[in-house]
Image 1 (cartoon, rainbow, N blue to C red):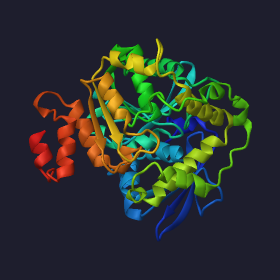
Image 2: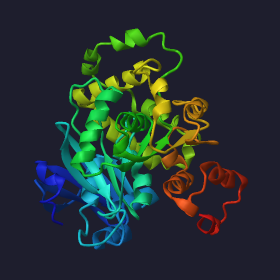
Image 3: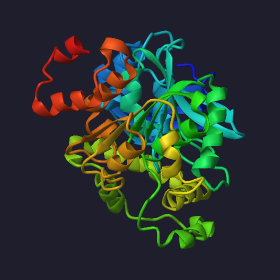
Image 4: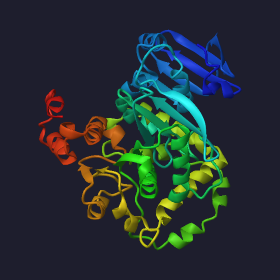
Amino acid sequence: MDLTRSVLARRPLVTVVLDIAGRGRWTLYIKHGEVSLVVGAIARPTCCIRTDAATLADLLMGRRSGVEAFLTGDLVARGSLNTVLQVGGAFAPEAHLPTRAHSREVSAYGVRTAYLEAGPADGRPVVLLHGLGATNASMLPVLADLAKDHRVISPDTPGFGASEAPPWKYTAEQMHRWLRSFLDAVDARGAVVIGNSLGGRLALELALRDPDAVDRLVLLCPAPAFRRFRQLAPVAKRLPMLMARMPFGPPRPALVTGLKAMFADPSRLPSTWYDAAIDEFLIAMKDPSHRRAALSAMLNIYTDEPFGESGFWDRLPHLEPPALFIWGAADRLVPASFARHVTEALPDAESVVIPDCGHVPQFELPELTMRLTRSFLATGRRHVPADRVLRQWKDGQDKPGRWEKES
């Protein structure tokens, strides 16, 4: 395995424990991209990969991608999921795997920005934006689906994941400047932009300020400006960022409980996915600059101006690119009631509320989410209105073969 041309070559030392079911454990030492293998597992590796021999053989031979194995549960990641994706993307480089996610870095608006890229280089560009406290791994189901026929680019936004955390205020206006620079840096201006939660708010800000930069928008439970309960906004604006210097120590069970609350039915996701997400979050929160970024971004969601010349809701009717809004009826973070206000502001936009779904539809109901997304991105006779797609789903009419025939 040659990692000297990968982003891992910039890291002095990465340790990966391979735990192969029934076969034993090994440790990979990766020093500036140079790989060595020793028998046995070390304590506290950068990450741990658990899988079976058949899956590992498929990965090494290029028959499957690491993203696919992770999403199907055949590969379990602990520790740095970002590192797991970096290593997985380097297996069998000569093999053509649409769902292979290449880990890359670029400077955008002066910020070292880590991102995943998958799919054909000449495909229609799609940019995926994750939510608050998450990383680009939270968009993997969308990446894996669209990479079959699109060029998919999924960054860690500044302050999150493996990207740098500059001392910004992390307002929507500030972040949109970075996003414009990022699109230029990766040659994806005019892309479809798909955002979840805070990523949806960022996608909307880009489209409002620079409509030519966006082809279409898919907003997965976007976090709009609060219209009510803003009594503490003046206080929140003055909350000192020095709080971010305090040690971050919520007990892990509390974090898991909070993460599961984002889903209508947490049992739809395997427990190993929760473990991987919490591991990645805790790694980021060890860094004071990332803690500060998360706190700043969270406060700016609450203090985002709703009305007035610069207010979100008064600007929203001027949105130009076509948009699809997907809401979760059981979303505890962004109530689906926002759908009514969006429809009033954008009567021509498509908007659907998914029953029995929480804040992360791409993970909780990935098949339905991607059918809605692909239908919206299609044109002409292949376009099926979102409300019809959802109605088929709810009525049980979406039987095998029916979707392909009607779309």
